[in-house]
Structures are given as C-alpha cells and as structure tokens.
Image (tube, rainbow, N blue to C red):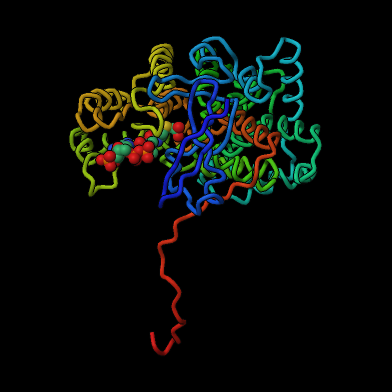
Amino acid sequence: MNEFAQLTFEEKTIELPVVRGTEQEIALDISKLRGQSGLITLDRGFKNTGATHSAITYLDGEKGILRYRGYSIEELAENATFEEVSYLLIYGELPTEERLDWFNNSVSHHTLVHENMKTFFHGFPLGAHPMGMLSAMVSTLSTFYPAAQNANRSVEDIELTIHRLIAKLPTLAAQAYKHNTGHPAVYPQNDLSYTENFLYMMFGLRSEDYMIDPVVNSALNKLLILHADHEQNCSTATVRVVGSSRANLYSSISAGISALWGPLHGGANQAVIEMLEQIKADGGDLQKWIDKAKDKTDSFRLMGFGHRVYKNFDPRAKIIKVAADEVLEALGVDDPILDIAKELEAVALKDEYFVSRGLYPNVDFYSGIIYRALGIPTEMFTDMFALGRLPGWIAQWKEMTENNEPIGRPRQVYTGHTERSFVPMSQR
Ligand code: CMC
C-alpha cells in the first residue's frame, strides 16, 4: 500500500511518500521535494535525516536497543568472537564453521604489510598521534593495491580489499605504537586469533616472552564487538559519503578513521582519561568540573557523557561496565583514576542538568578504563575503536556500493552577502 503525507506551503499541497522500515520506523521521502516545490529541508548535524536504507544495524535510542543484522548486542558480546561478528556484518549472516574457517584463513594470509611501508613509518616524528599514522597508512595501502582504485573493480577485487583491510589494520595500529616506543615492529603470527595476534604485535618482543592473558584477550574481543557498528554515525556517514564518489575502499576507510579521531566521536575514549587525569591533578574537586560542564560560557564538556541517539542509557555502556569490573578484579588493578571515574559517574547521574538532558555515561566512558587496565597507552585508545569499527565501516561501504547509491551531496541555505561589486585595494 502506498502511503503519503501532505505538505502545504503557500497554498500549494504536495504529497510526500511515506517509507516504513522493518522495525516500524517511519520516514518521509523528500527526495523529490525540491523539484515539486522549490523547497529544501534544513537539518544541521543531520539530527533528523535518514540518509539511506540500511539492513545492517538497528538501534532504538529510547529503549537502548542495539542489534547487528537482527542479533542483540548483548548476545553477540556474550557468545561470539570478533571474527564471527565481522563476518556477520559484512556478509549478512552468521558464518557456518566452514565459512568462518575460510574467512579466518583468508584474513590471516594478508596480515603482513609491504616492507616499503616501513619507510613511511620512519618518516613520522616520535610521538606522532597513532590515529594520524593509521589514517595515513590506510590511505597509503591504496597505492600498493591499485586494482582497488579501479571504479569498475570486480567483486573478487572488492573481497580481496576487504580481507586485506581487516588483516592489515591491527598490524598497522601495532606498528604505530611500536614507532612511538622505539621498539622494532613485531610481525604477525598467523596461528593466533585476531585479538591474540594484535596483543602479540603490541606487547610481544620475541615469541617466547609474551604470554597472552585470557582475561585481557576476552575483554578485547568484547570491546571490539561492542564497537563493530553503530549505523549512521559521524565516521560511518563519512565512509559512505566518501565511497559514494566511487573512491576506493582504502581511502574511504582512511576518511572514516579521521572522522572517528575527533573528541566528540571516537576520540572521546582518550579524552575521558585525560579529563580524569586533569581532575586528579587539579585536586579532585568533582563539583568544580561538573559546574564547568554545566556552564554555557565554558566550552568544557564532561567527556564520556551524552550521546546523539541514546537518551536513557547506552546498551554498550551497560555491558562494558560489567566487563570493566570483571577485568579490574581479575587483573588486580588499583588505579586512583578509576575511583575518580566512579565518583564522577555517581555525582553526574544525580545532577538535574545531566538527568534532564538524558546525559548518561556512554561506551567511551568505560572503554578507556578497560584499555588502561589492559596496558594500552591512552593515545592508542581511538585506534582500538577503529579496529572494532572496521567491519561496520566495510559493511556500510559494501551496502552503499551494492545499492548503487548516488553521490552524497547535501544542499544548504545560503546566508552570506547578496551580490556586490569588487572593491579595489586602495578603497578598502
Ligand atoms: N557535558 C555537558 N553538557 C553536555 C554534554 C556533556 N558531555 N553533552 C551534551 N551536553 C548538553 C549540551 O550542552 C546541550 O545542552 P542545552 O540543551 O542546554 O544546549 C544538550 O546537552 C544536548 O547536547 P547536544 O550537543 O545538542 O547533543 P548532540 O546529540 O549534538 O551531541 C555528543 C552528542 C555525544 C556529541 C555530546 O553529548 C558530547 O559532546 N559528549 C561528550 C563527548 C563524548 O563522550 N562523545 C562520545 C560519544 S559515544 C561514542 C560514539 O558513538 O561516537
């Protein structure tokens, strides 16, 4: 049944098709609005704009629901491996044992990066931000695999690019870390699982001297799953828009990494720990910082609080909070920063300003705490988020490409000068 909504403006009425999703989300299709009426819509920050149809991730911010391909985040985090979830996001179904073996085998055969890439790493200054290095290196991969740049690339080329990216991102992230510690790069070991291999490349120096702690490995697996997709967020929308120009997958993912870096998005996990350290160094007066966050003349925000879509609670934060407690106990971590985090959470959750605006701790409030307990340095936190989000970005890029979506190109309401004459320099 075709449904329509009517819009009346200046005595003209036009009909806008109604689109319903499988979870009864309702949208008005305004794609023909301008042609019919001369009007465009205005929605700064795309707070109320559906940019696409998507069958990958469903979330309901009011009810705190998050599902990948129909499976709840709670069940996936409890039962699945990150490799299975990656396959699910990219191919649409949970893998059989045989398909998972095929996927893991293919990925593990592409974990090395070309030795010439070392030259680029050597060029970065010591202390270069790992997100800057990661974004640059992923973009650089496109120059080593030119087939990916071909706008008429085959399905096989795309699949190979996808497997290469999943395989190489942990290697590149670990090498970015090693660059800043001055240690030699540790080469991947392909008989390890995805998370074990990453931990080995980060913390191993020689194969015999690094034992992977199962608690650390399981926490990392959970964290990556929780971050694996989140429908049309800032970095995913970036990946889709860049990809919509038919740019290659490496460049699209590199752009997504850059978008993720910002402190209002994935960079929040780093910003949370830096904020807690700042509060501690300042004497630990929590009320002072809460008041700063509430002060509209002060740009300070409580990092790790609030979310564009979750206004009651962030389901990922609920899972991760339990995981954080387990990890801290199992590893016997006693960290004063964590005490400040717990107190801050308790104070903010009772404060009318935060309660009335639906500002709850988000996934990044707790993820930074776990990463810190796992021994991952603060400036690597957002790289960890990128590792988790990669399969989601890929799935979204693939869906956009397969649906042959048009190039992303928003409109604007111009508010600048109307036409005026050029003024010669001598008269300005
Ligand atoms: N501290 C203090 N006030 C806040 C905060 C905060 N963290 N977040 C939102 N507000 C206030 C904001 O000032 C506004 O107040 P008012 O209505 O009086 O003008 C109101 O709450 C609504 O905020 P908004 O900026 O309109 O909301 P948004 O949906 O545009 O922004 C956000 C969402 C996540 C960018 C924002 O909450 C924020 O900056 N949080 C801190 C950064 C952070 O933790 N980001 C990680 C998000 S989770 C990871 C991910 O998925 O990217």
